[in-house]
Amino acid sequence: MGDSLWGMVSISFQLGTAPVEAPALITFKTAHYAPRLLAEGVNVAEAEAFVTDAVSAMRGSWDAGSGVWGRFQLNGVLLEYRAIMRSDGIVNVGTLFPVK
Image (cartoon, rainbow, N blue to C red; front, side, top):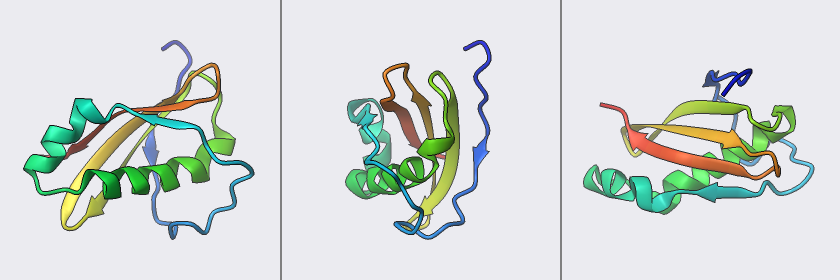
């Protein structure tokens, strides 16, 4: 990815409190990771909603081609996601999985 920077995302903010200028256009590759989440008893929609809030809150500091990853707990399960902003401004969440 050339000059892309990947790093840990702090998720210590409260959901819905960070100002967002415009709704983030976010795509999820749900079919790629849903079976792993479901096997751990994780509600896929709830996990994606958390990631949507986290990604939307930091969207203004991203450049096309850059990516982030983050970890959070949902119902006692530690989850990790990875996302990249495409050149068209859409954020693609390619994976979301339980950390073993």
